[in-house]
Image (tube, rainbow, N blue to C red; front, side, top):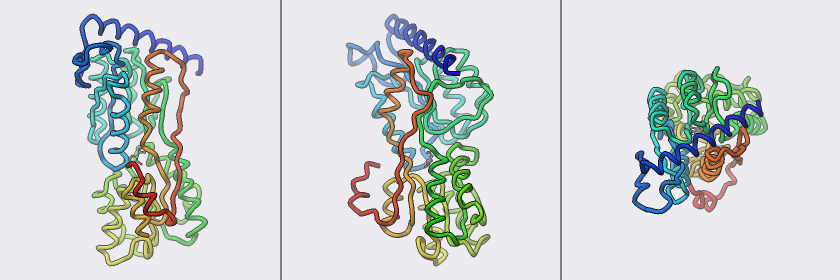
Length: 328
Ligand code: GYE
């Protein structure tokens, strides 16, 4: 496996070199910007096609900003960024466009884990190396990507579960799931369930958005009147849950406790306001690490198969100053 990876990254290097030479002959293109304008050095830019899965959450917005800031022209990249609006078919189309453009590196955040076999095979046949970002894939294609960078979703679920076990062992939990079939949903659920699965009385998806989180909790309050806690797979859905709980005349954080994942500013503010009870961080600001990986992949250098972004966790002892200092 390892040897095969190395062979692939070597191939990536060959492809990148060829593309740079081709660019020198015909000038730069792509909607990543005005590579030609600045004059000097424009032809050395690494052409990256990035398929972002959407703009569904505060986490995603922060991640997009970080990726765009790091994969900038000043840093040596010609970035084509496409937002798929949480639709797999849009992502598949973007990936095929990147093949047609013959970019140097394809990076993407897969909205769900399955359904990529065909397009991943097409990318592989094209020789363009793939850098997987944030979420994971489940595919029959052999060695489908050079490297993956993201968080340990299962560990996030386990950390949340351990807090519950310690602090609310009698809680009756409704689990507010993220996009069904996404790596973040599947693994957070698995990690949490392994620790406190016997306390879960119901589950439904809120697709990682505030609006759908609110709707799911409105229904859950009817279906599970004895619930005392919500474990939400992200802050945005938890913020939607707060609205639904308050509209039902109950107190979030007290009558119904909320344990969440992400740690975006609004989520941490809810913790200060005592409406959330515990937040496991998932750090979206890894654009710099991603840029470094892409640079190495384009140069055909060895990269680790995975890079795990480090997360923390916060309880209600967090201060307003800490929240205000939050970058996203
Ligand atoms: O937790 C959620 C977002 O894949 C880690 O996606 C990401 C998740 C994040 O919509 O807010």
